[in-house]
Length: 301
Ligand code: NCD
Image (cartoon, rainbow, N blue to C red):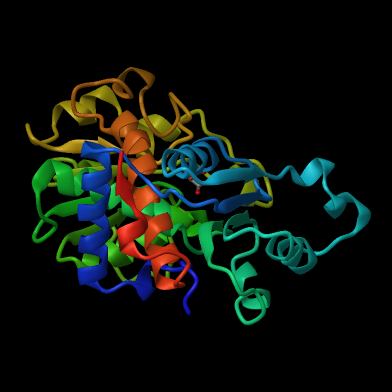
C-alpha cells in the first residue's frame, strides 16, 4: 500500500480523477458516516495546510486530532518514529505529516500500517499544495497542455517548486523557472528566464516566498521586488487572461507588490479555498486505497 508522499507516484489519470473529485466535493457536501480519526502531525509551522486539512477532515466527518510538538513528548526526547507509532497504536486511521527533513518518510514507510499523507517534506515535496495549484489552474483553463507557467522565487529551497514543476510538465504545460542568483536549483532541468522575459508570454505566474528558514544566513531583500519580484509595472505587461498564484505565506513587498495580492488576476485566495476540497479528495483517495472505506460509504449530505 502506498503512502501519499510524492506527486510523481500519481499517474496523469489519477491526478485528473482527484481534480474531478475535488470539484464534486466543492459543489456538494459529502461525509463518511463512520468513526474515523485523522491525526495532523506538524513539526514545522503551518497555517493554511494544517487548517485546510482540518476543515477537510471535519467536512468529511472525520475526527481531527491535533498535535503540538512543543507540548508533546518530543520535548522528552521521543523520536519521530515513536511519535507516529503512538498515533497508529491509539487508533488513528490516517496521518497527515509535515516535517523539516526531506526524506522523513523513509524511516516510517515500511513500519507504519496506516496511510500517511505528506503535508510538506523539507525542501523536497509538497504534493497536496501541488494538487491544489493544479486544481486552480484546471478551473481557470480546463487544461494544462501548452500553458506557459513560470515558477518564480527561491526554487532551490522550495518544495512547492519541485512538486509543481514535475507535475505541470508531465501534464503538458511548458514550465519555466525564474530565480535570483543563488536560488536556482541545478537538479531541475527547466529553462531559466528573467521575470521581464517571462511576464509577456506566461499564462500562469507562480510566485514563491524566499525560504529564509532554510538558509544558512539572512539575505538582504530591500531590492528583491524590483529586481526579481512581481511589481505593478510587470503585472501590467501580463497577458489579459494570465493569472497569479502563490502558495502563501506571502511577504508583501518582497516577492510581490502588496497591492497585487488582491488584484483581479490573483487566484491566491482561491488556492486556499481549493486546498480544502483537494484535501478532501486526497483523504478519501487514501482511505479507499488502504481499504479503510469503500466509495459507497461516502454519502452526499
Ligand atoms: C508553502 C510550504 O509550506 O512549503 N506553504 C504552504 O504550504 N501553503 C510555501 C512556503 O512556506 O513558502
